[in-house]
Image: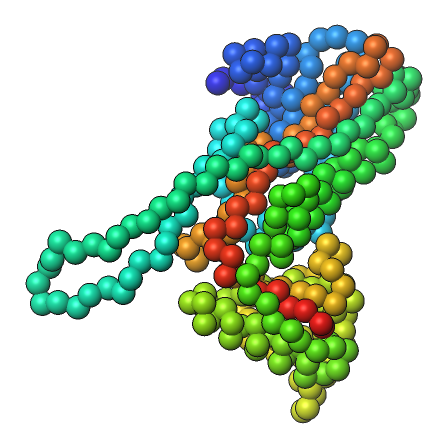
Length: 319
């Protein structure tokens, strides 16, 4: 698909514009901006039509709000562009662990029985929207008055929040990491120095017993995160630094992690895909005409967390 380059009048930045007629989007174009990782699908004609500059300005507000404080995606191997928005189902094979390798002096035609279970999962849409009144659009064009952007930022943030809840917990019966985990360790109050270390040690021991090796990320509610930050071990060592060295990964805080709980998650990128985020359609902004008096915007994405190894996450309770 061949595009044309366009220079933004307000910023001087260049974007590439593609015609989407052959992709099933009649009267729409796709704006590709190297600085904003958001799909921008804009109407070319019609009522209450925003300029490219106005459209990108709003998209930037949506994208930056969605990217702020995002934790969930850092815990998954990402599979992007698995077919586009029209892809409604994700299929994957679940492998029963093979037996031990054999030792011999010559090469043999040896293979273990491979048991694969095919799983088919629906890919949900996470979405919200906002609108720009026609009077505000014209005031911005004629008098350089800034467009009202609070609703755009709020829409981006709300879609991000829905994704965080989906990936970390559960959302509309789709289970994420915590709800899918089969390992759990009961710890003790993290306001007491030494308890976080003992809790993390216990959780890591369970993961090692399940043959989940390597490094781990730790996800905490802000309350437990601050408690860990404030703890000092004997000799003056900050317990936060000690725990971070133990797990080999990062320590994240998220308000979507229930207070008094946490979880250890195998670090993605090891080659063994414990947890996969299937992205049919990444974050997208698309506009539409509201009876000629306003421009409506859909902010949406289609993503699915696939927990392929439930033993690769250990929940921590009672902390």
